Image (cartoon, rainbow, N blue to C red):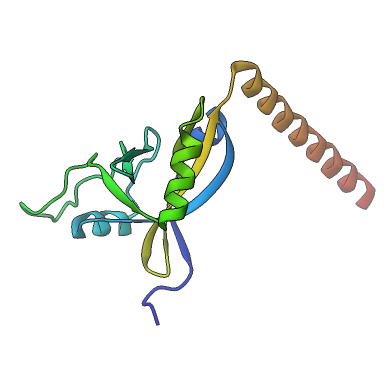
Amino acid sequence: MPREAGKKIIANNKKARHDYLIEETVEAGLVLMGTEVKSLRMGRANLTDGFAGERNGELWLENVHIPEYLQGTWTNHSAKRRRKLLMHRAEIDKLIAKSRESGHTLIPLSLYFLDGKAKVEIGLAKGKKLHDKRQSLRERQDNREAERAMSNAFKRGRR
């Protein structure tokens, strides 16, 4: 039985969901150094500029900032080093093929511990145009206004 049970979210990439249309998501493990795991357990990571890329038939997570462990010594890791993603070969091949299509990229959406093991949620994403972003913002704002109106009507009806 693992020491930790359940899902503990470390970092979310909110900007990715705003800037990209997420077509598919996949969970992957990470190859990490000990000081990286300790830094993650402190809840420190930044996925904003991160992406996944292919090298020699393997997927690697790049530009994800995991700050150095404060109590680390000379064995500390570099903050933006390349980290290998752990997935089944069929999943890797499928994602590589889809990411090679025009306009598609692999973006980290969230970083979390699942039953004590570090996992990253990777999304196959396509960039949104400016008008798509405006449409998403308009929909979100309309939903908020509708919820507010329903809440106010409910409050008036209770009195």
